Image 1 (tube, rainbow, N blue to C red):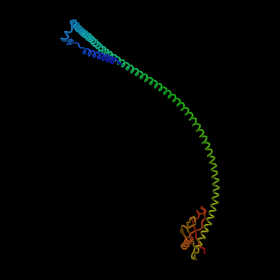
Image 2 (cartoon, rainbow, N blue to C red):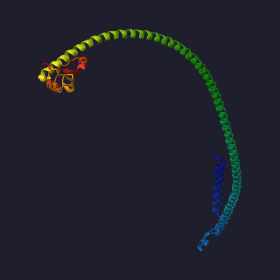
Image 3 (tube, rainbow, N blue to C red):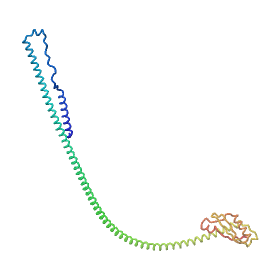
Image 4 (cartoon, rainbow, N blue to C red):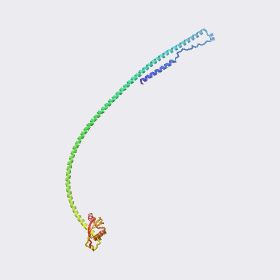
Length: 320
């Protein structure tokens, strides 16, 4: 519980006591009784009966009762006065206590305010100290990070320099190896090229000798073939002439006459065209009609022989 709340509870307690004291004081009756104590009346008959002694005794009794009542009243009044005085003293005491409590409360409040102010100042001081400590820690952390970054940067630079050195050494080694490899390859290529040139020369000589031999053989074969083709051409020319003679219609007026024709033949021997080159007109007409009537003339199935027969020129002479 805080000091301020404690003082407030004390003040409330004092207030309650004062309130009940005032109520108690007001409840007392400080006025004397207005009526005298009733004295029993004595009738005339009783007075006759009662003797003087009884009367005196009764009077004394009444007086005594009055005295007792007065003493009791005085005692009651005195007690009330004592109680009132005591209540007054208690009230003064309570007021003093209240004043002291209020003063104590004010002092406590003031002290609490001062302590609060002091605590607030201490708190601010502590917060400032904490902020200062945090600031120093941040600065130290920043300095540490910067130092670590500088160290790492230095290590990275050293590593980069080392890597660059190794890379340069590796490049120089690679260049030397590449140069050695280039020289080796050049020498190997030179040897290979010389060998290829030599082999090419030898191959050229062999091919030349072979081509000459093949040319000689081909020439020989061509001569043989040419001779065969010419022979075949002569043979088929004779056959073509015989076929034309079969369809040639002649008379005596054609005796001693002739006609030169150009005949184009398909591979099957089909006559594709007939052209008169020169000669006797009558013989030429008869020869042309004979070729067209024959339609197909004998030709060789061999291509080279056919080449000699597909565009052939003939001289037709009637046989009489």
